[in-house]
Image 1 (cartoon, rainbow, N blue to C red):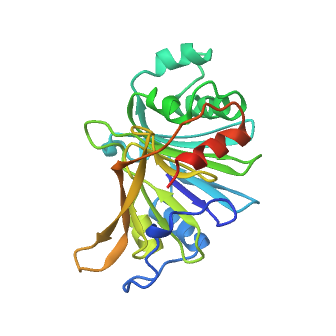
Image 2 (cartoon, rainbow, N blue to C red):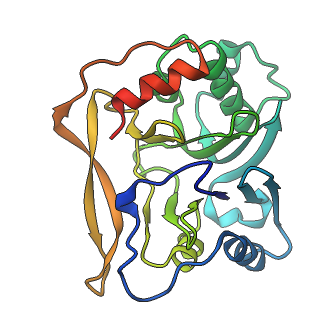
Length: 259
């Protein structure tokens, strides 16, 4: 899967950008999207949005050895690309009052996001912690222009997910390391496990929501700075995590807990 968001939609953490590093130069979003299609000429599909966003996916049957199912869904102008599995999908379907026959993981994530956006009975971190399994997803709300992404932290280390910064500053999120590496040069890193990203609130841990995240410089095999990884700072606590009930105060509450 691939998601690209221009700067007016989402901003990557500044520590992820390594503009002075040598080596491969970052590419523009259009080039990265073309490279993704070239890598999967028969099975990739994509959609672009007028506000500066693009989503792409490869059909699951095209990559059977990867062990992760891939899904792309849209509902009420909310779109989700999903990688992995939810082990408790059946119970979550009952919890959200959805139809078992027509609901897959991607649609469930859309419903969870919509519940957070419109009603928000729980903090965002609690909603993501309720998802059991190995997964990574990106949600794009075309109405509000918001981006919501997360990666699990299961026993296997979580479904593969990487992110980086394109030549024009766009955020690039993809499960294919080579696509991100070629497209973002040295400005890329693994998306941190157990974390979620919101375009208005930034990056935070859903496993340890009361702790801030700390950027750790990342050096490649050549000794060159290569983006940054993010770890939970056990010594820095967040004062409070207020409950939220709308899109506006959800983002405001997230700001209190972001880096």
